[in-house]
Image (cartoon, rainbow, N blue to C red; front, side, top):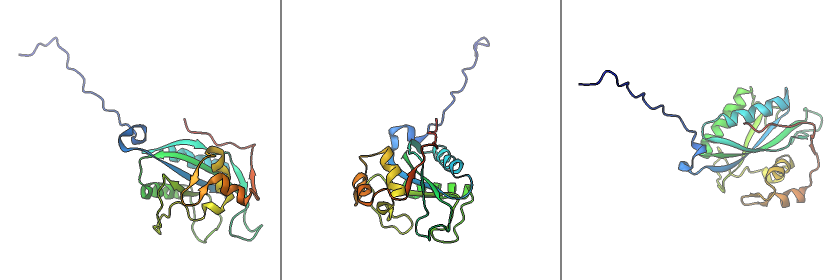
Length: 195
């Protein structure tokens, strides 16, 4: 017979914990390059950073300063200049899932893929994922052209100067070899690290 004066114990509330916040899946470091040359470029870059942070299994750890660069691979003056930045994340997502998330962020900002090196509202590229080296055509790691792009290396160097690009060497040395020509820091602009 139960005692009517005893109140039932409430059921425990189970809190969902983001996998990147615990060590159960051994989070990996990833480097993501962002670029935008259409619309409100700074707002779009910030939106991409925020969406990365809102992704289960991803935590943004560092956001670089913003750089302004001329479009790569096209005739000068045929497109607006880019704002570029690099984001360092810790993630429990495998590379393919991180790629899918990057493409979903591009779609959220109405990225159009009509031509190679065409203008874009946002470009989200995985530059490196841990020390993974892969020639998978869907996601080549590290990014096959990162070592020759100052607009990736300069902002990356700002947030991780001792970093190495797998198979290519230290980013400081890579950047020194090419020089920062055409990559201009925008000290008047800033991306916020999500809280």
